[in-house]
Image (tube, rainbow, N blue to C red; front, side):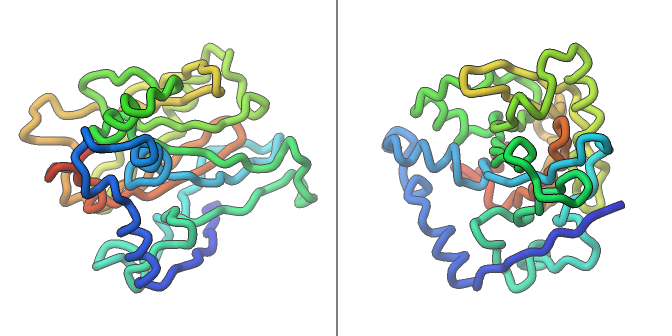
Length: 248
């Protein structure tokens, strides 16, 4: 069963102010300071903070299609949110509710954690990682789009399972309107001091003149499930242009 999650929309003027409040955009990378690097890594078109839904412990299932693929949703500028506004907090698909077992109030161990999604393969993220000396950032493999998930508590997933990466691969998708869905080629489960990092690798085209993901795709809807956590997020490609080029 698909579940729709309510959106809270900001006025267009507020959304524009939020978009303008990114001073790193008007600087050369060499002029970025620590605050600029942190902003790119935590709150930019390539990095989103989201709160997932928590599956009941005895009823884990494949990830439901999240709000950004909900039928009848308006489009920003013909391909986005109604009226051109973003949801409150700058996270496109909004915040889903916690789904406790049996409908009872969730215990602290069942509360949905805040997750961070980050396009590790995008040039601005790589530059910010170097500037911030982020010790948790994964090494980027050539030939792949790399989307990483941070913040999953170890209590909610068995990171030592030898079959975990294979299971995660089957539960993740990038959807594009009018295009074939993209499935990850591999999923890396990395142990870091700050907690596990899950890296979804999607193959790039061998011919760079014919990329798998193009600006015409307009929007990417990433959906996945890790353990009991189901989540999804939209990324708008027109916002992911860096130094005149689409960066993913």
